[in-house]
Length: 487
Ligand code: PHE
Image: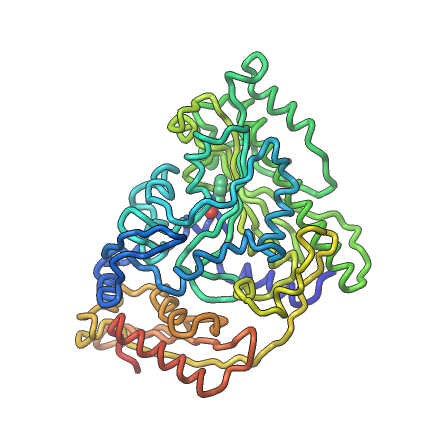
């Protein structure tokens, strides 16, 4: 159904070494030996005393690590920009969750407390997700949310209906390639029932009745694991087995229906665009056990798409402690989170995540009118493919003569340090950065790294002179901020 472009992007999502949303938070490498020292050195000269984000002013402190390029994206709100593919994707997902039950929250501010983003959700104090190498901090207790779950605890307390949907921009320091960008969008949903309000206090029966009212679908669903598992995916002490099983079943059907809607639309669009024969093979999805600090049991949902299993969402039965802390101990239910760009890349066959930030008419005009008429959805047609330009940068870590006073030592180094220097120096003109060589000197024990940077603009052909200039800025930035020694 879809062209090779899409296969490439699908493979890329996988090849990026991310097994998905769920793991993004868990698999982060632990913070390095002295990140505070490093960030102090990197920002001490230029750190502003305060920053303004969406009209509010926040004091910074030595934890501050948000580059101005990222700060400037906090006002873009692509999920609310009419006819932007991120907003269209949000609308498609909203169409599956009726507003009478699921209240929509689309305007939460991206600046949250460490309490909201981590503690309220049960993240342990030493969880790698908190590392400054991975998260953008305004100050020690304030950050740019890394996921929409940051609003769960508050909504469990204040949302007046039995469920909600949030859409929002989220921020993670990350590598540079065609499926990762420091800002992306997530949607989060939850549904819960109140034991004190359901007939006869029989929560499981009420949930199953609601499940019975949900439509059916024709997807092939692989769900080999049990509803919960004592070691791998435990039932919570607050929940009876029948309750957890009913909530899990409602969760799974609801999310399957969402995925069905998305992929049916993706297939239709591709057929319309390419005149291909409609696929009569039903879509195939599978449930995989997962772990999140704020749900148990937990799962990820994978979709069989163009020959590959793509993980597209994380979910589970909400930890009862969240409802209890919210002052609603009788609420029991489920929650999920999904990355919108990843879905939009599949829906529209968008090959590079940087395109979402493009203000180029050749990009934006392709989606006009779709938000109000979803049947007009068509795959994106690339307007150009400009030539790549590869440049390597090799350097020794841990030079003692460094400007940063010896920072950039092997123990301190994190790939994301380089990624940030590259983004600062070259913005969206870099498609991809790869570590191509790592070497330890046999005598001195010093470590050397070589990264290959692919300079390629989505919008125009870069001149040699400007590529050289950008590369020089990368080199200078590395020396200045991390005191590395260029080879
Ligand atoms: N917040 C999780 C993530 O970003 C996804 C999630 C949301 C998982 C809600 C479970 C429940 O990886």
